[in-house]
Image 1 (cartoon, rainbow, N blue to C red):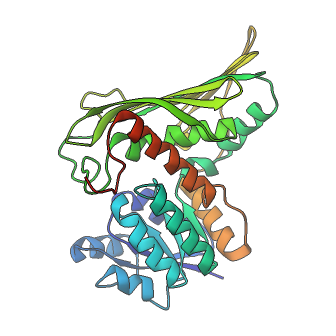
Image 2: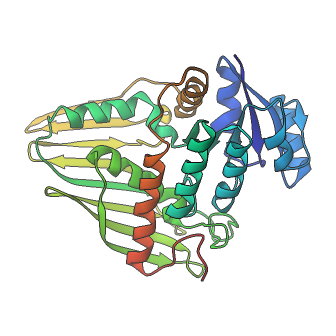
Length: 328
C-alpha cells in the first residue's frame, strides 16, 4: 500500500517535514495540495512533483485519492481542519503544538478515536533513535534518583512574523518553541507535572516572547523550562537531567541529525557520544506510515498531545496571560 498524503496550506515547514522525507521514503506519496494563495501551492507542487493543486482545504480533505492529511496550518486552524479530516476518514499528521488549548486537543483526540484513524502530533524529535537513548539512560537508573530537569529552546523570531507573533493565530514563544522543552521534560520524568510558577515577557499584547516555567513532578523531582523568541535571543536547544548519581546533558535534542552531543557524567566518569540516525522528519514520516499501514503504535498522539497542552495552558494561567484560543 502507498500512503497518499494531501497537504493543507503552503507552509515553509513542509519542505523538510514532509516533501523531502516523502521523496526518500518507500510507500509514501504526496498527491494533493491546496492553499489560500494558489500560486504558492502551485510553486510547491511544481518543485516537489505533487500531482494535484486543488482550490480549497475542503477539496483536499474530501478527495478520494487522499488517504491522509498533513496539517501545517497556523495553530489556530489545527482544531477545525484536523477534525474535518478525521471525520472524512482521513489519517492526520498534525504539526505541533497540537491545538490552541487543552479543550481543543481533547475534542480532536475524541474525534480521531471515534473515526478509528491515526492522529499523530508532529513532534519529530521523538522518532529519532536519540530519544530512545535518553529514555534508556534515565530508565537504567544510572543517574540515581532524579532531582531536576532543565531544558531550553530559544530562537530569535522577528516581531513582524505574522503567525508566531499573533495572538489571533495562537502564537507565542511557548506555543511555537517552548512546547518542545515541555515535551522533553514530560518524557524524561515519565509522569505529568504541576506548574507551580511561570513568568512571561510580552511582545505584542498577550503574546509571550520570553517564558520561564517551574514544574513539580512530585517525589522530589522539579523542572525549569526556558524559551525565548525575543530579538537578540541566543539560539540554543538543550536538555539536562540531574540525578543523585550523575547528570545527562543533551545538546540539540530537537534535530540531532544536524549535529548533537550527549554527555553522561557519573561521578568523575564523563562519556560524550552521538547517537546514529537519519533525519528526525524521515523517522517521523516512516512512523506515521507504519501506524497507518501496519497499526504500529505512536508515542505522540492521544493522551500525550492532551497532556502537553495541559502544561502549556497551566503556564499561561500561572503567568497571568490568557490561554490561546479563548475569548479575551
